Image (tube, rainbow, N blue to C red; front, side):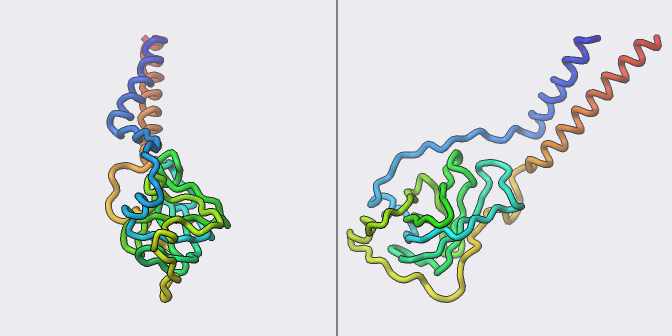
Amino acid sequence: MHRLATVLPACAAAVALTVLGAPPACACDCPKLSEADAFARADTVFSGTVVDRREPGGFPRSSADPVTVVLEVSAVYKGEASRRQGVTTPASGASCGIEVEQGRTYLVFADGPGDRLVASLCGGTRARPSAVPAVAVAGAAGQAPAGGPDADTGGTGTEGGGSGPSSVEAAGAGAVLVAAATAGVFAVRRRRRAA
């Protein structure tokens, strides 16, 4: 009987992970780009100071969840950026998200249209020292950010249909399965004791 009490919850957990799927494990592994290579690959390149970090729902559920980093743009070297520009990135460097500190200035290499810029560690975004970046020296003179409406929200990547259950839904379903398995074990114990 003890064996059944041990095996049944383990089986329920295995079924829950199989049915609901475990979240993918990931770690950021990308080649370090030179500033010139990052500049060539990016749609938009600008310098800006971090003024805000917005996380959907108040906090990320995984390191890959999108967050929006809002920067006060000081110079644009390629493409277009607003005075306050939102950039979407994974929540953590473990999933190649740009790791930033509020109040620090960064040289941002981003892809996508101005209202939906996306950046990652693999794109070359880095803290910007006080010196003029090499991309400006190489002929991409910095321009003032675009006037007009601020693009401070960026795309969150959460619109439209998701690709599976959320962490909360998966945890809830797993808890229901474990509770059902535990109830089953107790029911079997009662029947055997009564017999």
